[in-house]
Structures are given as C-alpha cells and as structure tokens.
Length: 398
Image 1 (tube, rainbow, N blue to C red):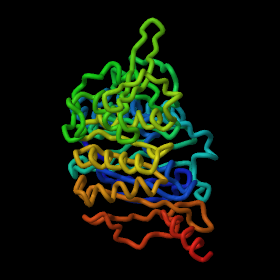
Image 2: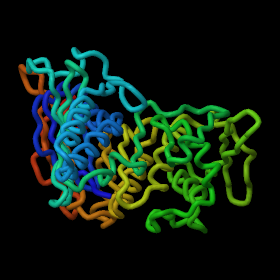
Image 3: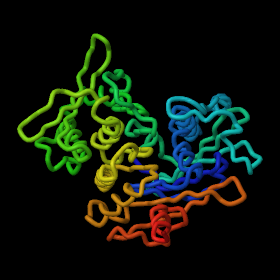
Image 4: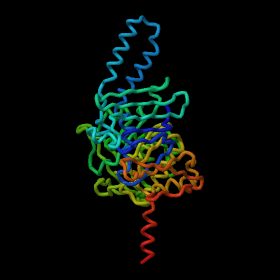
C-alpha cells in the first residue's frame, strides 16, 4: 500500500490551481469558511467515488502494453473498444460526494470544463496518477506510470471517510453486512454500533494505540478507555438485535465500586456519540490506512479536543495517514503538545491554512511547520487561530 505524497488540483471549485501540496502522515487542514478546505477533501472523494472507472482505465493501459505481439486486426479491435470505454460516464454524486451541476464544480475564473487532479506517491518507481475529468461528456482520462493499480490507499478498503454530519444519539442504529465485510463505518459513522458489536473482541492492529488503562488489546475495551478521556468512567455497550436488523447502543459509568444501569445515548451528552465513530476508526486502523476526518472537535470540551488530537498523532506516528479538517485551536495545540511529548515526530506533520485570494475566485494556501518542541516556525498568517489574541486585546483596552 502506498500513501499519498503530493496532490495537485486545477479548476475544481475554488481551487483554481494548487500544485504539489505535500502530504505526510498527519495532515491538518485549517482556514476560514469557504476557503477551499472541503473542496480539497472532495477532490480525493471524487476519485474514490469513481474508483472502478479509474481501475478500468488502468487495466486498459496495462492491456495495451501487453498486446504488442498480437495480430494487427486484434490490436486495432482492442484499441477501438478501449477508446469507446474512455467516454464512460463518471459520477459526480454517490456515497462520498454530491457535487451538483457544472456551475458548482468548475472555477468560475477559468473558462474550461476540465478538472485536473494529480496524485503523487512516496515511491519514485510508481510515479504519478494523473486524472483529467471532462464535464462535457462526463468522461475521465487517466495517466500513470506502471506498476500502479490498487497500490494507493485511497482506492482500497483501507480507506475511511468520516464527515462532519455524524450520527446523533439514538436508541438504535441500522446494520449493514456490506459495510462490515469491508470494515467500513459509513461516512456518517452510522454503522459504528454494528461494527463494535461484531468486532468487540478484535485485537488492535497497532499495539501503540492500546490505552494505558485497558487490561486487554481488544477493540471495545480500548474504545471505552479512550472515550473515558472525554467522560471519565464511561463504558460503551453495543447490542445486536437480529430480529429487527438493528443494533442498540448504550453507556454505563463506573464510579469507584458502583456501576450505573445502562443509559440511553440521548441522556448522556451529544458529544460522546458524535466522537465515537472517529475513535473507532482510528483504533481499528492499520499502518498505511488512510483516514479522512472532518471536524473531530465538534461538540467536545476543549480538553477532549486536545486528547483526540493526541490519539490522531499516536496513530499517525505508527503509519496511519490522516487528513483532518479542523477549526479548533485546541486540536492544533493538542498536536503541538503531542509533538513536544514525542508522541509523533515533527517531520511527520503538515499544517495548511486556507484563505481566499483577494479579488478573485481562488484559494491561497500557507504551509506551516512544527519543530520538535511543538513550536510553529513561521509567522502565523492573519486569521490563523488569532481570534483569542484579538479579543484579549479588546478586553485589555477596556
């Protein structure tokens, strides 16, 4: 499995032309609203949504490179079939994306109907996967250097995307054997309860993710221990109900020698259920997996935000590639502290700040680096988590 090393995007919504955005193990995407953060993630999801079409293009290229010794008429026939398949329609909506019409997709400063998305890998031998998406006929061109197919984690089942619209507290949740077979939680984390029930005794793939208070290396116990960092003493209780094809989820607390009854998620706080899919996705991950997570800080106390950042840093330091969109300075500072505590090497971290260009429909992207002590080396761009200082200055003036 190969991680994504660089990403270049042209003519995709507000991302007019961004070249060679370097990615590492832990990638934090921040910035003002409507500056291109979600679009950056959607560029990857667009490719993921069209995985089968990309695979077909790659397979066709492999075939063309292996038919040189065939008779001319057979070669010509195969080439014609492959050329016809180039115009197979791509999907702009599906499980991972819903991009709308061309007025929503293309940068309005560029009068072209092509999108370019290039993925670079860590391996020089594997080269670059170049995709060109044509809106006019809904087709896609794919160029790459062999060997390539299925070596990028984005196109494997080792990919998990958890978006910002995650599951809310409920008594019961749906089941999905389709998602269980692929080890997926659903883009909203809607099958998290089902996954926990079926995999409660699964051993963690990464030993370092075992919580210090956990007596075993089993998934469910470690989920409860990490969730206890947010709400002390909590235990997660999933239970399958095959007769109605659903799974119930409840919580209980341990206070000293006392244990509460099982509590309805509706009665224990919104943030616990909201963060649960993210904790599970991280704890079940393996080295070289790719996780894309939006707003992990939502509905969490600042201390909980920092602790989730530490968990993300721990997973990334052990080979999991994370791309995280966040508006939280507590999450950022959690990563910085994890760096200083040597949970993760500072060279494994990339921080990007997105802002809008003045007077044009385009994004300006700043790369910020962290040193071994968790200090951000560059001068902080205006708007980069500086609201606290601004408000403090106003208070002092009073």
